[in-house]
Length: 477
Ligand code: B12
Ligand code: SF4
Image (tube, protein in one colour):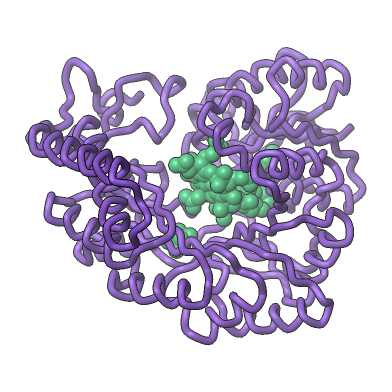
């Protein structure tokens, strides 16, 4: 075997996901698998999702791969650090890829990884694997698109590799390398319907400051509409899913592509209900009509804040009023709307949070998910607050999600703020839509009041370096 590909996501360890139970396979390594196989490499995939570390160790012991390739995002880091150790102990060369490692190259390499692939993995691995077979870990500076440690322990980054120019020249993800029906069965058991994910495009040209562009930069490339529709037809005929999830960053980003894709699906008689993500400014009446006609049952219309001031600070390039209007447009066409709301972005004040609550009340999305802003390394937001980033633990014990920013309100404050926001909006809808029991309304009102009171009580609490937190850039850790 030339390479064993794996990722560090173990569903059974994830208490939250065990409740949600909507797993999808890691498309990145499946893309690598199909491409490398098409180039004649022998590839294994260890799909961690339904496995554990012991099973990974057993797979390594059994397969004895020359090279182990691991996908890493900021959440899977902790398992990846253990997997690096397991693979190294078995004598494999460890190559990391995905959005997280390029920005922590030095740390991952010092924790045992041999090579980090920066950006898209297909072309780099296809040139790296023969190099490793011939020269092992020597002369790595001849391979573009990687980072490694030289003999003096210095991180060397080779020339960045160009992006794939025509995605349609590349095979679809190697779904047959994993037990996709196991994922579908989890969906079916917990939600009554099975779902399969696809991603037709790579990269997003928008500039939201907190969003990671680590892999695809600001490029945006798509499969041809016909090729994309062929993939859907193949999925339909092979797996018969009840639902599709388009993991594209902004599914309706290019209207010409989108309408052609609609036509290509129709020509193939493919209509599978689906959910996707988009932006208010990439939706209009015609697009929404087409989405409904194609079977879109839910669209995640990233919203982030109801305060235009904060949206502008995020460089999100979207109008809060447009988000509200498009939410209603989607609902008019029978499409559920989901929103992502981010609290605690740089400069946010109480009145911005009030505006967000008013925005949610007016927009009335079917569902909204909240998160407290955290700086992902490599993003403009991270660079902006870098000097003030604090942590309470060492690099190997924290993820970027655990980072806090000096001067920002406390975790307690955001707990209360989230409680207030969620309950206040739900209460508003319970009152206006009717149907909620008096007990539920009372519970929501109590929660909203507790949240609001807690916010007011804790609004003066600010995160500071000191006993609990240290500045990561000052300490170099
Ligand atoms: C789908 C998705 C999810 C799904 C994952 C389900 C699944 N298994 O597919 C869900 C919704 C669960 C999810 C959750 C989260 N996600 Co997410 N997600 C995505 C999304 C939109 C698409 C991923 C994808 O399929 N990409 C397409 C493939 C082809 O690209 P790729 O995976 O990057 O793979 C390429 C390269 O990275 C490289 N590569 C990949 N693996 C390897 C391995 C080796 C050895 C090599 C050499 C190369 C290599 O080659 C591949 C092909 O070119 C990306 C954004 C994006 N467009 O990529 C965010 C993204 C990966 N998610 C992100 C984040 C932050 C999260 C969460 C932490 C959010 C949260 N706060 O909860 C969680 C983490 C969950 C977890 N425990 O892992 C960030 C990661 C940032 C970072 N630095 O780590 C991204 C980049 C979004 C962003 N722009 O900020 N996510
Ligand atoms: S948040 Fe969405 S729209 Fe903004 S840059 Fe990231 S992928 Fe693009």
